[in-house]
Image (cartoon, rainbow, N blue to C red; front, top):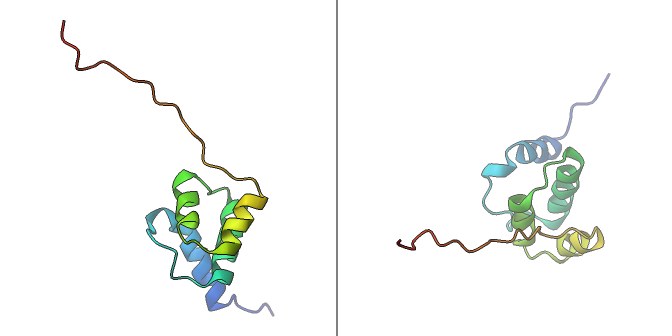
Length: 87
């Protein structure tokens, strides 16, 4: 007989599913953050907003993991426009 998933596992899966609506992860313990971060990578859900969310926790292990995996923000150039110029 299969054992049911733990409450912690279900909670992390739920957080992964709703990651786009979460605004702060800094109150989570580091071991849960690491698990959530790794599951986010495996699920292909890491984007600019989610990466910023993890970085803003300031947790050393998360920041080290991001650096070790060489994950960086994509810088998109913004070109100036002259929409307000009158003819």
